[in-house]
Image (tube, rainbow, N blue to C red; front, side, top):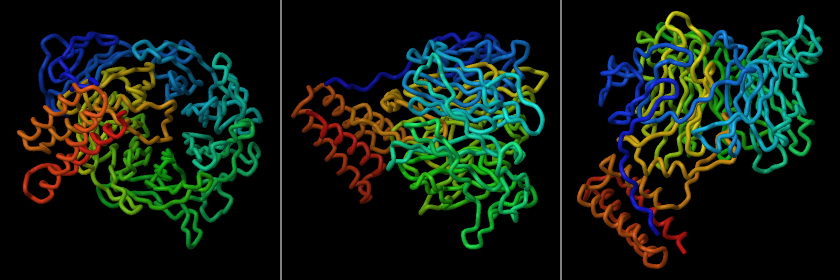
Length: 610
């Protein structure tokens, strides 16, 4: 066995994708004028390298810290207007993953890239199918795509539709069969009254032959003449109204063409009175607070089936749902926040004890990261989940101010699977990508970033990163007007090489934006090394004792796999549990919980050793 401690990362010089980029001390990389190099900076300060980046569509200046840009792939010709970056009819949107493929949604359809070599993504397929939004998910041989605009057609045609009633119009969730990736075929098109802004794939642990789609329609209600059952009456006293509900679609995997809407549950209702509009009525929360919309819809619903929970970002409320019976989501708890304008998306931590909600103040097209903007507005709100109820702990917002020509607000992201820590990578439109630690939910802090200058110094275009997700060792960013970017985190004082290596052990065959999987780490020595690094970072062991543990870890690494190594691991684990006992008893200073975590990881390695 040889699993020794990985060496410290040394700064290297690497080129940026479109302009020169110098990797400097502390992992700082930025493509600015000569002489601007620095070894340290104040996040959000005048010396923050994100401040003052020069504009450009494909030649903007770039700044990064503790993450490296590996590749950039521009949108294909059919998915862009070469005359302007501001044509929203061709905007990239959300992304999903399957094996070595990434599926990129677009207002004009979707594209598929082969990412078997993350440094060289290759276009694998493209499907032109306009309809707006284009958020997608992938499950097995199926791709689901949201469409909400009036121009969408059942036949995916580009000619659009006409009038208030058109039998060819499509607004809802499309289902494509991708078993032949060279010839994707639309096999179902589930029409909904308010279209589909986003959707959520929800698996049923008790029924592997069926999946459910929670549909979030946020647009206007279509005419009943076009779709029977739709009622465009914004009155909660009208029981037929198409507001104040979500949609549940059932998809039999053996016959996806039979996908159909099974219910539009009144998840915002008062259980006792039956009033369907029982949550936030809209308006502000008093002087100096945000004005937020009434809760008659959800924007995003993030499902975590393994723990039976979902988090709904629903206009004026953040909602916790019980989805143990996926066909029947049940509201458990809801919160309001005086600093939120529009509850947009949600992310749980891995053990389901916290949830982050984002506030899309300005709708995603406004510059909401100005130096004059309040840090609680357009930010993340971090909640602890205690006994099924959410308790506000803190806020996190991108610390670097952006310009008036950069749309910027909290948007989509995912967990970075570092064992023992809660870390999220997140898109902020033209604010770039920010990676932050929220292990202490009351004190989140940034540990890495990437940013580009605005698309224009004089004109506000909607652009930047729609989403940024960790998938099997890399971070993938969907850039609205530029294309697909691939990144890699680099070691720093905030994230060790062992922690990154441990995160890379978490592999998925599929990953979708609003379907959160559980991160599970195999019993390997590098996972224990990651926990040891965290002990050092938090002064969890006395210095002399930490050195002894490090020496013993190195010695064990040099042993052949077998009885002697197994016995040594068990002995070291026992000694660490005794260290933790002494800390608990006040006999020594340290972090007993982290010591026990390291001991448990070592014992896991020992028990699986043959």
